Image 1 (cartoon, helix red, strand yellow):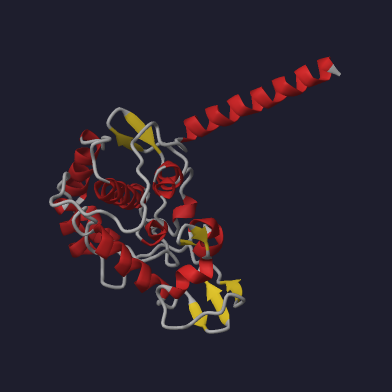
Image 2 (cartoon, rainbow, N blue to C red; image 1 turned 60 degrees about the vertical axis):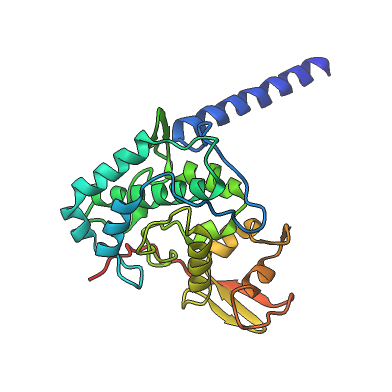
Length: 264
């Protein structure tokens, strides 16, 4: 029995080491970058630490109000985008940053590198056609290298702010719209409220008092949606709809369209 227990312990240890090594290789971790949890509303600083104005200008120029993206136009401004990505890399976040600044930085980084990934593989029908789109460590931040999945799952989701799911964009039709302005620390609370309300009330969800047909985002990340610190998907949706949803409302999920969110 003792020998069996030793072998079992060795197997568990080996699997754990393999798992950690794999995740590290895939960039699916936070590489020690700062994470601060949101508790209630976000405290807004008086000024922004990082200047996201060049990304803001690109978004205003190449993203329509409906969230569709002019990737051909972006291709003509690759230099500006590359310079912005370089600036992000050279200005990694620190523990002294506010929660608002961290959220703005990570959301903009995720979205800008997603656009860059599409441009590097353009023309492409879907981001899912790109090998390792979410697992390859393509995002340099300081001396660290992260994947898009690492930023989403190991940083942003750890910040206890479910509205990030409506701010980051996966370059697909069924994703929440890519906001045509950069996120900034001084506006982050208002911006997250706007994109959350816009997505929930959009045609990407079908909401009535006793029946819900929701985006798969609400199924994939159901545990993230909380009200007063408790998991409560229907309660969360109730915050952003005029319908008074019953706690026992039936829920189904709509097919997810992974086609590229490209404007004509």
